[in-house]
Image (cartoon, rainbow, N blue to C red):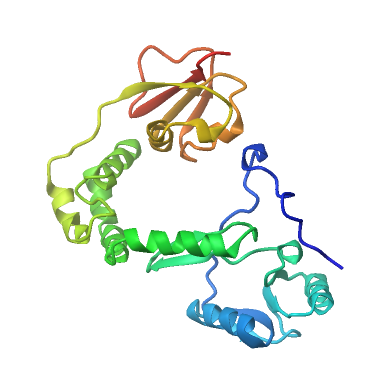
Length: 275
């Protein structure tokens, strides 16, 4: 019998160098997905798949993904084994140890989707986070995304240099910016942002001195700086748990000291306070 890890056996967050899963958004419109099971759990997954436009098929049909919603543990394990033997990726409802992928709690502001997952640790926690995030996201957030998509050519024309374009977009979308995504009605301000006076923060170098190797010890301001940085100059040996707090496309430069003149945009000099 396959059992979930008992309470207390999940690894501590600070001990994990990477993500437990890679979040992806899969386009399922018109594509077959196997669904096995009856009852409330299967009905909930059916509704979710139908919202995504999937074509729900039986256990013996061709597909790439499958969801197993069976109450009996041994029946679920057997179904998962049969599907995996055919090369399918499988989700076993409420059984993360049997699952190749999990289904997140979803905040839907079409086309903006926010997925919240815990790797199967706690669906209740994911639900609680979704409910809180729902309260802070304006109803027009999806329309803002569509306006920005429609303005893509105009944005590239206004800022042909890619780094300058990214900094201009960041400035527009930051808290209090012209198109701040958390302020209601900013979907109507895209044209004004495009034609208005450009406001881009000057290039600067910010020094962060780490007090420990625990990313939870970063202050809120330090975490925001890391999330916005264009360039990250850091000492060798800085833990991955700290470095992953920076944007994925920020350049990372291990070096003994940061340069005297900062590169364009926001640069971070990351070192130990006392080591």
